[in-house]
Amino acid sequence: MPTDETPAPQAMELLRRVPYGRLATSMRALPFLAVARHIVSDGRILLRMHSGFGYHEACDGSVVAYGADNYNAASADEGDGLWSVQFTGPAEIVHPCPEQEELFGAAPVRANGEPFAPAYLRVDPHFVTEHTLGFDASQVVRHAA
Image (cartoon, rainbow, N blue to C red; front, side, top):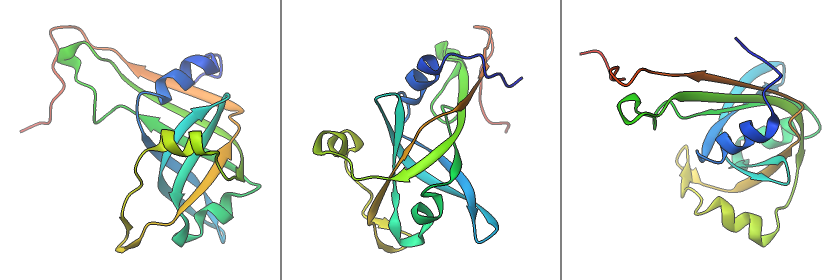
């Protein structure tokens, strides 16, 4: 059940555990979902995405939603629970400092076959939710055969 009572620092700590998430907003009255690389910096989220689609411009000055999870990385047989973090907040195009750019790591070479051109957004999380799934040690998470 969603809650806004989860402390933002705990959610931000979970975001630090995975590099990518999904950005959602609308562009020309149509919804879109885009993959983005994120880092946590000063209680805000910095996103790196491909500029060629124009999504960053649609987000600039708008309230956006962003979410990340460990669904592909977690393994219940190792004692890890599954979690997801989602938040909404205003987004703004920014130019990260060199230290922040370094935290992003290497950028993809291509996005949909064209050279990757980075664009950066800062999102100030206002409403944060966190969902977790815990497993008993005897349970194993795997794909059905």
